[in-house]
Length: 241
Image (cartoon, rainbow, N blue to C red; front, side):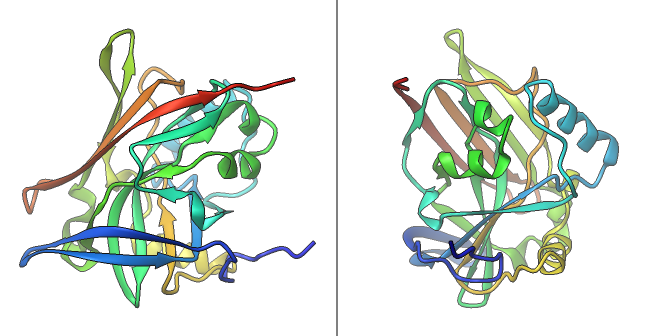
């Protein structure tokens, strides 16, 4: 079996259509992605990261061997679809900032690291590969955000008991900055080259990690007065045997 390292392009390729939103206006662009990386345990605040580790331990997930950790996932898992199909009923979403390198220019978007939790308890890498990673169709140039990255808000809601319930809320200051995250990736043997997309880590879940039939998330830029949102429904496939 040939193992694909973090730095190598994969055989799986996806092309997604995004709206590039800049201070000057909006334009549409198709971006080819051949490497998808999920960054985990990226918290700057050790106490809050320990809280997130503890909430995952509560559902059987082992502590990470190192922080941050980078999980290689098939590029085909990244999708702008408004509905995903998952095995069983134990998966849930995680709102995260998304970085994409398109021809040497880095853009920022919004994605969900939707993960199968029962499988995560015995194999995080396997669980990451089992579910699609829904993302919003709007991207911002990182250059327009660099000076106020820490002010950008990240939030999520889930459908629960007939209502929309707040599930995550915080700022990107809780996670490593793009520069520090890319340096950490390179230190782990990876490369954030053109064609690479990376989810940047998440916030603790309000009320604990749990499944829901719908997940909604928002990235808010209070300085430039704009936001990116995406929501998707989750359909559970039967598990036979």
